[in-house]
Image (cartoon, rainbow, N blue to C red; front, side, top):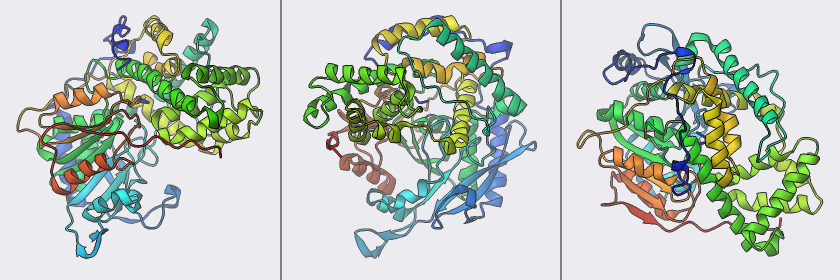
Length: 529
């Protein structure tokens, strides 16, 4: 999910008539525990263990440095038919260095593979093994082979598209806070066309791009790597199918880290989670505005959060009348500032661009926010996978009036991201593939080894309540919270307290005796240039 909490507000606005039946009368799939898919996963994993992965030079189209080695693992398209059509997932790896970064004479024992997923749906982890070069990751990279991969549908892993990438859609420049009926009708038409494009370009295969299959693929990858048990780290969406894995295959888990957890409550997947996300981004947007106000001497955008908001709205209105460089309108402005809701290290650059634009210099904003046609194919691939997985995973409202009512109410208190989130997810209202019944993530005492959950208290993309809900559902899990912070994805970041808990768990299997809190990392430094 581009991933509840307006501290209670969102819950009162949700699910005005959520329809349980899939679009076009398609039937929901059964609960997968003990199913043919589970048996098919065991067959595929056994084959993968026998075959392994042949790592070699990465293909040129991956654009990866020579230090990475690449290979593929074969998985069934449909786990109920393990002897049917198969697809190949691309995998990257850097072997454990065995070198203690603090003592060159000390050899570090190898602990196996650490598999990582960065989220999405639609994100690729192929670059992940390079992270071992960073200081915060060198101890982990000494003990573990760092393994990334592109999930099904992503990159070269049986790629999905819902429109011809050679003819990308023209970027939408406008993003009205209160959309007109004509604007809504145009977006509805686009959503219907996109859903039809997904079905037309992928056919019957489309139904197999799901979070449950991502979890099953993960078990086949584990076997192909020669690991009896999995050590896995998922960020954002990666925590959701990681939680599905923990529920389906608890005895296959060695250690698991859930960084910035999606709320796994079946009633939240995915429509409710996206409403909660929109509400939470409003809070984080207020945090960013307050930071800009504290640095008014640098940026001149206002001495209060409200004054900063008016400066932003002034820029938005000006861009609506005349897009900067002909390519940056309110939609691009909002997109650039939405990224700042994920990562506060983006704050100085965004504030500077807004300040410069209002002072008559549009170049920093254009450079920051303009569309990049050369990235259109990759962006379309990510969008297609995101759409397919979320639409397939769960029931969605099929009546536009439900979406309109819920989001009109929410936008009154959380206008920053609400309607953009609607347009991104609206193809799910018109989806033709079968919808699944979300798995009830849950483990019993003794089923699952202790796991580590990391969360920032003010994370907007995956609101904090999701981490608490995941902890309630996974027996023996421990939650480490970065208090008062809102960066999305905190493992290996600037917080040494968080990193200490991560290292202790991955390197020693040691968790705090109870839930722990860390002071927030330092706010970014305001700079004029």
